[in-house]
Length: 536
Image 1 (tube, rainbow, N blue to C red):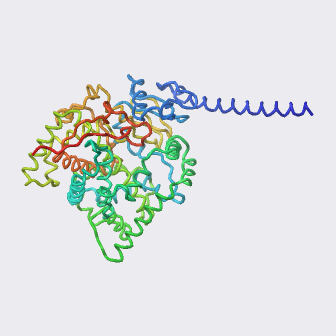
Image 2 (image 1 turned 135 degrees about the vertical axis):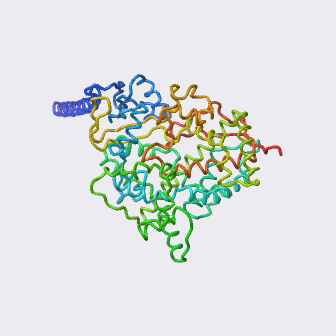
Image 3 (image 1 turned 180 degrees about the vertical axis):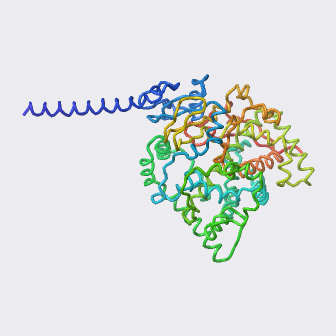
């Protein structure tokens, strides 16, 4: 019997060893992809590829890809591995321009596998691909015209005044506050009002259900961490399986919110000028009455210039319309909320941090705000905000130094030869554009760690190559809500700075540490500043 036991142990050990060796061979064989094509590449670490610190959550995503970007210096592009997945990193602004604009039909998707049956909220404008994305983009674009923004600005101002009137309740005994949290309450109320026509009252009630959902979406968790890696590294069929493990509480909240609000409006014949009303109109009529509002500037600001000029007609030959039902409405509302809530609140808090640590710039901006308010009878309006020219420069520099998304991801959707080379990308090739690294490249932005709004004067902007500034992406798939996000950021900042002075306090981290676990660029531990009323 002993010899039988020894034989079994030997067989099991041999089988286990064979499995380990086979797995190691399979894993390392993946790492010959770029070498076999004669492409500059960085040597990967087994299993982790070139993103070990990102996988182990030891470094912020932007910093990880900044190192990769710097290691590939001297090359227009280079190959790396996202775990086992071959990924092309693009450094050259002209090539980036080709991918995002000129050759957009070959790179129109983000490669996120969605499964509407298992997870209805996954089918948003952010994740859709091909003609479904294109048609929905055209349908939603009228929600973000200059006319719409002007009408929504009054709601944003009301929320901003609510914030400053209640700020005393949000500060500690020493007069300091986490400005990320304060800004998040403001953006939650703005989106609740502008998207759903609902009074969220997050500023008066920080524990409101809407605020809890915002925290639920973006608070770091093992479940979310695993989800992100599955969605970015594994094949589409595994991505689709992941949707079975959806957040049911989040889904129920948004599904019920949309269903109840739509039902109430239709039963009581209530019409509001907000994002949800646009979706209701699309559900009932399939088209918008306000498409005539789209001006040339609106097409440019929503990334639709190329699309309108038939640049995206090549996406799919057999296009089909995208009909809206309540599940798809909920998906768009969740995407609108998620994108506008987190990125705008981070931008506001990052901006206040830079102004607090650069008091001369804060004073200059305040003078500009005061002058604009004086010209508009002391009222902060849409036109008043547009007149604060220095605010534009300050916000653009904030988004340069702290871009919400550290990288842009595109998937090659048809075989593509990289201009000026013999490299032919296969369909399905993962392509990443390291936004944070581009924004911190001294060749484009000398002394990149210095906060300098003058980088964005018209003269200085003209000197830089296109596609070296990508906080909202570029081309037909750039952020459709760019104008909305910028407006709420500027209104929030202008209102706060017209009333208060911001300074570093004992809780302020100098320099800031970026959160290695955050989905979007965010400060670890928040941004704490001392708040005091301005002298009259």
